[in-house]
Image (cartoon, rainbow over all chains, first blue to last red; front, top):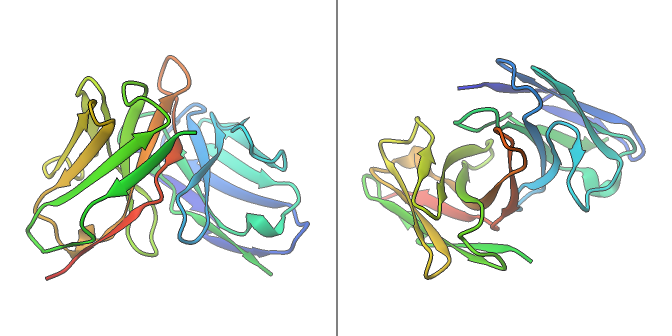
Length: 107
Length: 122
């Protein structure tokens, strides 16, 4: 199985801050990397697919980059509705696997 | 608008079989693939498996010996059965649409159900 490791596991930030979350794969996955946002009690929501493609309807302050084993999700200016947990997920091979999550909290 | 809704018992006894159904509306189940994902309370996400309307399925090896996913095209539904459950199977279970976005191996989960909590306890 491909292991996905996210860092940090949590962070505190203020509205307006630039936030970067990292995801590392245990082997090269090309650009087959997706990012999801999950709010408490809700299902995950797709933000980014293919490492850097923005899903329709997702604000442009979200962006993704990377290929191979190292990927980042960036929120350019954190908004109140962005406080949530973020997960990366690889689709390079089954079993599809997710990172452990990064919880973004209010400072 | 595509919508998915999980249904099934919220409480299952240890050693019994967990059974859930996902009803799809706004899309034909003959399109795309359909998947189950679970999340233990306070923990991360685990992919369980997916199915195609043809009946072709792919399961997580960690659960493969206990999992069956099936599809009912007449009802636009797909189902999950997980046998011999233990407390470790207590989780929120999500159904989701799995869509391919390139000709190789690019897949994403773009529509999700709201999730249903299944507790394994006697």
